[in-house]
Image: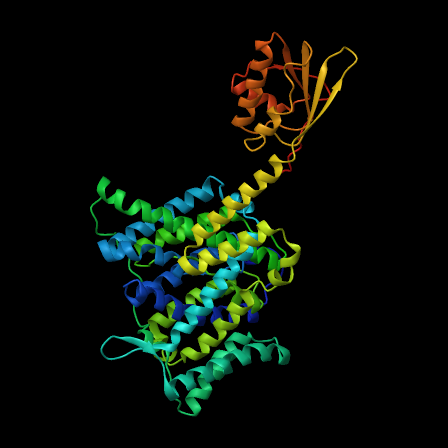
Length: 512
């Protein structure tokens, strides 16, 4: 039993009351989002609910981060809308299976660690863009579909009622924690709004107006598609995009929870859990998904720090599907909209406005660009990729300008160039400009004690320099190279002469 408790929460004791209530709250907020995105993609509402149940349960048990919540996220399903419209739902299930395999392999080969390469401005832009998306998706709930199937905004008394109830729910979420933190404020807001509607017989939009949530247990189902090369060429591009979007959002959510809880999650384990959950989804009729930032924040803000709340949330969704749908369908959408709007406001990194004057202009540009791409295209993978690439190019440019050379003549009359700053693709031009080949003596030494050869461009630059000196019957030698620099030069069959000594630098690598 003690081993089970340590597994559920490796960072301390489990507060069962907090975990259970947090799980119930999470389930309430996941249902309308899963339904909405399933319907948006042209799928059965149960396809979204099954995804919420399966993703939530599998990742809660196997994931690398207690407290994280996964479900049928819109971020992943929107990447598959074109596939569904062109080829149908069976191809969707096959794509989700393949995406799960890709994600599992990412974790198995320990590529999840590359999430550490995402700079802080990209994180700010990602979260700010996501906050706007969450908020605007709630604004969409102020629309209604009429008898002809046309969608239009609520107007008149119905609009005022919806707005009033939404503000009431948001007010409860803000105020209740000042009264008591024994029960999650989000759950109290949902219950309070429901009671107001029930007691005063208010006619307003409910969960049941979106779709019915009644169904049976998910059944095992092999996708009914041709198993051939043509099918693979159809589903693989979609699976790759879905896997990428799901991995990026999941691992960024993991990093966010790490900061909020001052604990460390396991990115590779989370990647394998996400892959396993999507694999199961494809064989049990779910639309797949990934970690959900908004629901994770609801869970963390409710006080959850263990796997138990995620398990409770998933089992609650299954219970609702099987037996409790008549009750859940009566919950006012305004209650859920109010809760999620507060979550969106909390997700927004307001600190980015306070520190904007203290940040480099390049970081400000990257953060705003990532947020803009996230908001306009709803493509989280593209937004983060663009942000990382631009940040890397800015970093390369800054470091390229910093390479310097100190020139001296040693006791033997040899010219010594002491290089400062890394030698890489961005700095090779500046590096080559430091040398005065025609005026240099017979022997020239390049001292790398304060530098490092990092890539193929650097190796090529050193080789070209040696060839230029050789063409004038002069000898170039490299001094104070670290063992890894010597290794890459040897692997590249570089003809450059290397001096070895006990004073060659070594770079200590921190253990995993």
